[in-house]
Length: 194
Image (cartoon, rainbow, N blue to C red):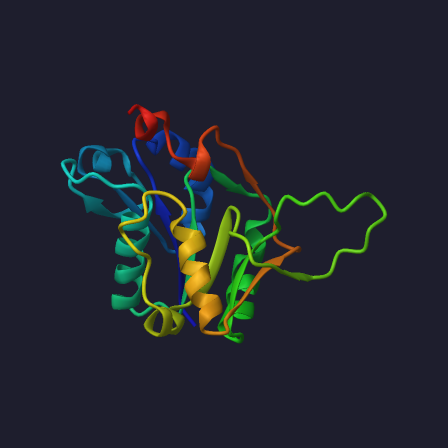
């Protein structure tokens, strides 16, 4: 089983390095970035979107997923440059869990269960994933790749199509992240200037 982590970034190479530099030392990471910022990628392998192509998050997610499938990865993780893993030691275990199930599996959603609540290991839901999530590469052949026409909410649309194919969407409570941003989808202020 081979797996990789795909991270779109948009003029935030410093944030990317801060949140993912250590993980990239131990795992295969594919960064999708703008041509003008590729010189900042350092230890990351990356693929490029030309500077003159207007895009949100749908296009880099599609480009990264296409590349991962072409290079023969069995499990594909998707995340954001503004996400930090609290438990990177569980990446391999999460990949094995995904590899053996017909599922889109993610880190814990930021639900407030209360101090005494019992939290199941897998929380099945119909809303979008948060922070860090993955799926088997062969599922993309069944449901199609990310739609590059989606500026934001590309993950919701992708998961909607997965549910149409009876693929479960679940959070895995063992796996936690910090995902802090001021704009929907983790996009920078530059995306919202107009």
